[in-house]
Image 1 (tube, rainbow over the protein chains, first blue to last red):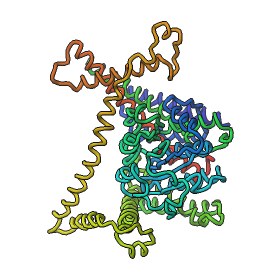
Image 2: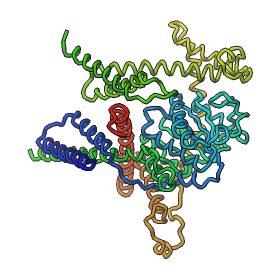
Image 3: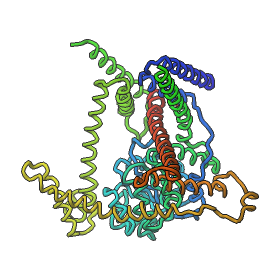
Image 4: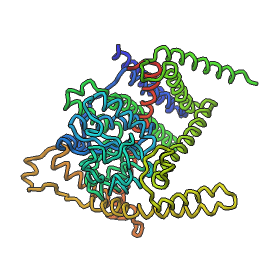
Length: 305
Length: 270
């Protein structure tokens, strides 16, 4: 039934595209709302009929996975939720995947955010992923949350020398000196890996510039797709790897599923998104081809005239 | 008065109430969650605002205007509250006054006299609201601009300029042990020697020819012109890749909202 619905939707889309091609070849303009409607039908039908594709991690994603995988148990990893609800659909899956991977490898997790709007999303990840899936994890011993601190780049400039100068307490008001995880931690330099997730400023770029480079701390950013091309130049010397957009998140999720049986029933929003993504990209490519055919045909007709 | 807007508003209001009632009955309630009625309202309101914003794709309309103004108002209020509680109460008060720290129930860090400077500059910034004393706020702005430039300049120079140039100096023959070894161990794997050599070559030629394209002191003719043309191709491919990523990002947002509409609201997908 699902397949019939999917094939029916694809059929509708293909017939519609051919109709648009024929219409535009006649020299008529296509209303932009038709294009929006096509995108809606494409994404909605792919979601409704659960179109999914297998993912294989690329080298740049695999390097992040291997880094977390190969760090010795108890390594200190900092995750920064530097994003807002607008970025949530594409970067939240990678944040949850990082949390799962770090916890299953029994690394020590330090969670924080430089964005006020990241606070609620950070808590969502803790409450809906970390606590239910790892009930044995003890706050303060296995993970800790510093919450949001205003200051942006100023915060990074301070924590590269001393956490305590910026954070008197953790998110719950407990002094850092009373938290076992901070017993041997002075600054961000004491981290074995930093995973900044986001797509704005302050975000992954600032983490590389103000913490990773001066502190010689390995950084593996998780990026919103829009900024991914801007961060690629930092790979491999200034960022050990990176996850670019929902595609990077889907590759990471697939690698988690491949390596850990305990995650076989986990929620995989990024993998689920790749079906609609693929179909939407195909439709956009089709529109670009139709536009070019029409353009060159019109130009030739004008030349002949 | 035209009847159509009234009828449309009445239909939307009726659908809103109907959705609220249906979602309230179906909502899961436990001790920790909000009440079913409240949950039903928020889900319905989220769906309404999502559809109101999306309706702009058809044409501008009052529902879109309502959602837009609501968003601007809520954002302004949210950031004002966050600024007060996280910057003033979170960072300033614990370093200036024990009494105020106790009042706001934040741990007192100890008196730091130099924190009086940002307090004064903060007040000076508010002088913008004064018609005659607005110019005084420029002192605070000058401090902000100067400090930001001072903090950013060395880091950008080091990480974005020197490190980026250094990252371009890479071996063109990766792990080279002779032509025999190259062919005997030939692999198209992403971590293989051939792809490594190809990647480094693309980076080197891309940077070199891209810079040549922006070198306008010599006419782009002959070998120089060929390199310049290759530079344009590299730039076009880069813009194309950026556009592809942007499309992916925007589609992700659409998928996110449609997942909410079709899943949380309509219950069509799990």
